[in-house]
Each structure stands twice: as C-alpha cells, then as structure tokens.
Length: 227
Image (cartoon, rainbow, N blue to C red):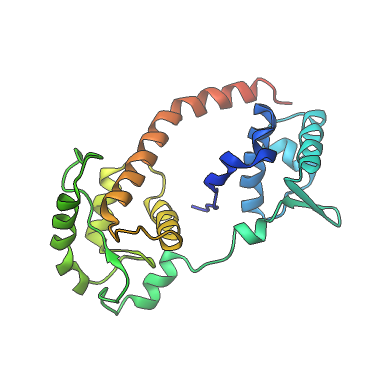
C-alpha cells in the first residue's frame, strides 16, 4: 500500500488551519493524489473526477490552495508545497529486509520491540514493566528480522503478532515505518521505546476503527454531489 508522510505540525500551520473544512478536505485529498503521481497533481479535470467534484468547485479549491501557498505551480504543473522536502525518498522496510535477510538483528543502536502479550495492554505501563518486556526480547536479537528499521526491529512472529493485536490498521508495516521514522528523528530521552510504539499502534488502531463508518457516510455525501 502506497503511503506518504503527514506531519503533525499542520496543527500549528496558519495556512492550513485558516482553510475552510471543505478546502482542508480537498487539500488532504490532493496530497493523496500527489502521492499517486510522484508528487505532481493530475490535470484539473482528472482531479475533479477523482474527488467527484464539479469543475467550478475544483477550480475554486485549487485557487484557494494556490493563494494560501499550499500548492506550487511549476510551469503549469501543480504540486503540494515543498513536497520533495517533506516526502523525501528513503529505503523501505522491504528493501532493508532483503539486504539484511541473512544477517542477525544484533546491530548496535537499534531496539528489538516485541508485541503485547495480550490485547489488554494499557497505557499505564510502568518503566519497570517496560524494562521487563524489553529484557524478555533480548534473546530475539539473534533471530532474523522481518522488519528492520533504524530504531525498530521485529522478527516475523513479532510482526504477525502486532498485526493480529491491531487488526484495524490497513498496513502494520507502513505504520511501523512511520513510527520508526519519527522515533529515529526524535529519540526518547529515556531511551525506552516499547510503550511508545504500543501506544502509537493502539491509538492508530482506534482511529481506523472509529473512522470507518464516518468514511462511508462521507463517501455517500460526496456521491450526492457527483457529476
């Protein structure tokens, strides 16, 4: 599944937060379209068709995004502002797995993270609980990695358990990659990562579950404004 980076600092971006709800939704959908087209938006007619919008509404939203500085016009080709800077190319977990398939996971600097023992894991884990779980996974460092990030490493069994524990996340690998990118750039001061990854996935799993019905209702409303 193709994915792109969406940064939480959008909450503090005045250009984004000043958008109307309709234009904000249009902007997010444009990010999805750009991700499908190597950072460039398709022709405006194709945008309207993809988003099930009439041409006047499509042009109105595009103009608002241009004036807000959220779309760049490069010789007639529209792209989200600073797309290449924010959506930088990085090797994927699959590529790293292929490179390191025959290597063990005991490389200095990474943390081997095990999935929760049960589905009743809570956000109230103490540091002692966390350390116990992480110490139990020390033996996993000699096993072959199925997911090998810069901060997170998982065996195939652990990866399967994460996916089972959080079934509402469309792609557990993509979500782990996003978490790995974040915690590599913003390393916790205490060095502990288990409960942070667990809480990250638990939160995303709940968001995906809770938004499913809303997406269905939203699509129904969009189809009501289709051509």
